[in-house]
Length: 296
Ligand code: NAD
Image (tube, rainbow, N blue to C red):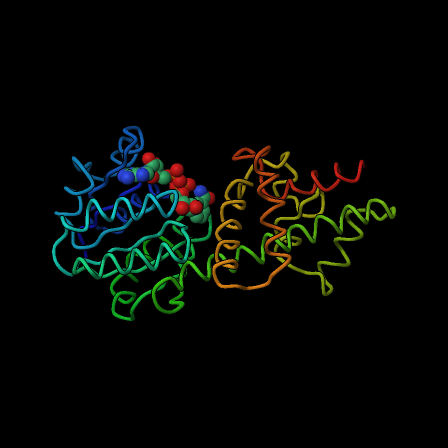
């Protein structure tokens, strides 16, 4: 069924996601604070709206793809009153679990419905419509959003109630951040012990050390030719984004009173690394920081 969708936040991720909704036959009313982002989306068939509220007023469903929780909550305060009663608000941004739950509450108070649906798969996945969505909210809301999520991705998982999508996202990325540091430390130790990268890879990738950080995003050049290490750590998944996601995980650990030494330490290490590497280096480049710290 073709829908009229308001899409707010047409940046690196939102722009191509909105374009894929157009490609799937939906009418998309788009808005972004940055004019060039609106222009690029318009070339793909997104109809520019005069304001976020104007986009929402004309739509049956609203998708947001914004940088952080305060952007989402600030925007909700601006647009909830403009929507038709019962409109479904689907937030695909990666934000704090607590902010996601607040967004659900504010939507409900305004007579609207909500789903948190963050993604993994990066800009490449957004362009190719191969994202994975992790959704939190009611069954009916998930069922309504699902055809749209499937137009923008290859997989959607309903993880539970309000905030469950964000919870799944930060737990997954905490595994990824910690495992990338573990793999990188193992390579640096192997170097000190005179072990070649290939030998360690051949053993660990088929033994109990196997994980995505090793076998797909291998932090040293050579063993996995497509990994960012082979192109001087151009992202890929930027260090700044890993630092952001681990910061959200650290907030959730503290708020939940969960003792998790490695998750918190990974957040600290990535925050320090991202200050230097920012958006220009893949998160696997942390191996160089570990090597430097050892004077190697
Ligand atoms: P981005 O900065 O490229 O895009 C965000 C857009 O939101 C910008 O164009 C900005 O102008 C717009 N915006 C901010 N406030 C607005 C407002 N009030 N009204 C209208 N537009 C507004 O960021 P991105 O890379 O597209 O990431 C978006 C979200 O997706 C983030 O939460 C990020 O963590 C998450 N994410 C990103 C990636 C990735 O690889 N880039 C992967 C997975 C998840």
